[in-house]
Image 1 (cartoon, rainbow, N blue to C red):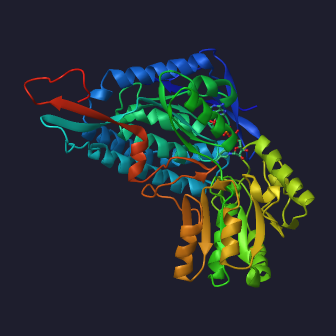
Image 2 (image 1 turned 90 degrees about the vertical axis):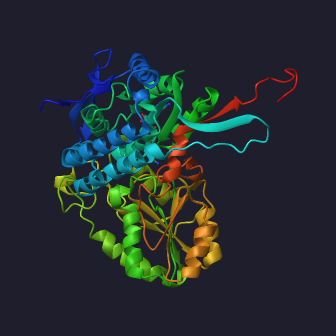
Image 3 (image 1 turned 45 degrees about the vertical axis):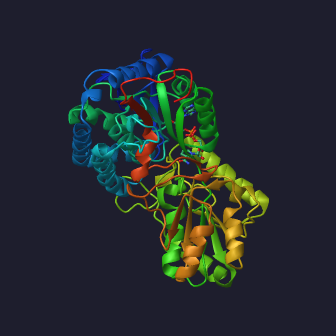
Length: 495
Ligand code: TXE
């Protein structure tokens, strides 16, 4: 067996192994084999990382930096990430099976979050308050929260981490990162770059291990001020409960069952591509997957034929190769989960139009692949239409008019994203207003930007990432009062 590459945690500015000395394997989903080893941390490691972050928040160089100097560090970090983009992209591809073609672009885009929030660092302003009391001067200060725990999932480790780190650091917090046990390697390689960029020690720390073992010690740690979490909604609910119990700030980016809605007047060629982008890109392992395709009845059969023709051509293969379009499922457990949902859909009476199994070709046999799968004749009450599969499984639901499309779209516990395909601008804007989701894409799908707030309504989460306001999620306001009078009147009444 080939030797496994070892990745280390970053704690207090240096590389760290687990206190117990244990390691756990990380698997390459294309080969199904272990390729790397990650420190198997426990509560001791959590404590060590959180204490380092707290020390860096309360003393040392970080709190002494001016906001402009903090911003410059973020810009420098962004440039370093750009210079290491290809290496980081290769690690993530190997570790979670995401296409290198997508990752190399993503790693060139991730620096923009650090530039954007780096630029915002010295534009965080308090206000002088127009006082209603004589001889009183008051102003507000916008202050960081303290130590932020950034908990990330396996499907897009670095992008989702950047969404948390950039505003958290720009606001002056320190951070402990807990990546998913299923794909920790790219995060550890990324975290190494903070010291190179000149960040003081302890500002960015990592702790690796199983969420079930260390999640609780992290979310309940008394020195953690805020939890920024992306992951499944069941874990999200637990994290939210821990945050509430221990009175911590929290943002939760959770799952989705997003409707991608095609009207008869849409540019159908584009809409077909949009449907594919929604569910087969990243093998459907994205929180924004357009997993419910709502198609207007009058074009339904024609549209399904066109979609089948395009989806059938999707090239499954080694995610490291440029021509591959659909890579493997990241984990073996997730593979089983996706296959079990395919069985559920069949049992519920949905009509299997494409895929529905692991590919039966020798060169993909070792990998955790599922064929692009399409079910038609889905009823919105079926589990396949209500629950997040997190895989390349599409449910097609017909609708008759705008009202019915809205009602089906909104009849779901989640509210993360939606797509609307129409050439009618008034209808597009009406739909954008009526759909209960944090993001609505019109004639496009699966687009994100550092400029655009992102987050969920309903069970899809709390809070927003990206965009100017995201920094507010990492700040708190302090009011400062100063008495300008020479005396202090009656002490027994409220001033
Ligand atoms: O995610 P978890 P898992 C969906 C997907 C998948 C399911 C579970 O359907 O099958 O969620 O996946 C950490 N306290 N999504 O188990 O558990 C964990 O170590 C604190 C949707 O991988 O949500 C990891 O770092 N943290 C999703 C992070 O939480 C805990 C993305 C997310 O893991 C913890 C991924 C605890 N008690 C999966 N338990 C999306 N919508 O983006 C675990 N963790």
